[in-house]
Image (cartoon, rainbow, N blue to C red):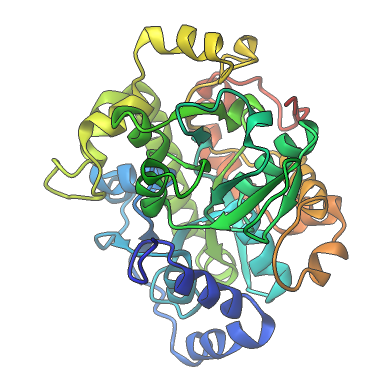
Length: 395
């Protein structure tokens, strides 16, 4: 069973639900505003030990922040989303990665004065199921774990279930045409699948790779094979830093963009850097598990195509990839999909949102555009030289 002190525990989930209301966030925002803001404050990164944090950790580990002339503290690892959000609200950290739906909730559900400045990565998640389950349709009547209601994982999973004729329940006793969704810590998902407590889970890497390597489950679908090149975690920064320390903010984004470019060309080194074997010990994951995500074997793709985990090989989607530009079409589509997704708690703010307004208001892409211009623009990441794209979703 999930433990209270585990990463993403139920206590953490309840705490985050309280924080991301206007009244819950206000004390921390007031405490931050009451303190004198140091214009020379160093980069203070808050992160969770998942591959979503890769660019921020690489930027620290490879010295990209210092190369920009910035002072930087060792990144602080948090145990759950509520802890990282609380530290960000209070000003204890000033650069964080958050699940893209959480940034929507933070800005419009609790009026957090912060903006998305870049994407951290694309894809990087999967739906993993027990070895005897061979299709999404076979999840009917079973329980699937999700890490949070406001996550790209929940959004993509519910789309997959709808298109396979399955309905959502949280009753714990699903009918044959229903799937019971259960909130669970990613760290608890692997043992829960092994024990038969759940039939599957959808989550960020490297927890899908962990199930594969330990032989307890298989990837049923990659989320990037449902929503082409979707973002998952985004870089979130305080508006007062963006407005009052624009040069500092630009250098932060420069370093992160350069770290993404380096990661694309040095995937094996990245797996080692992020692993428990590295002196920095950024994450508790083994080099073997991280390598399966960052440097998959050439034979993996053919096996995934044969099993149906990949249905769109023509997309050439990486298991996890990196590019920083926050395409407005993604943000607008995310809001539209969130409106169709069942989430727990108060959602009045969400129902009232205009997708195109959110795409303009939630994101400040000026810093990342300047950072990209210094390194050759979007073509440096293998993308077309354009600030627009069409969202592609095919279950």
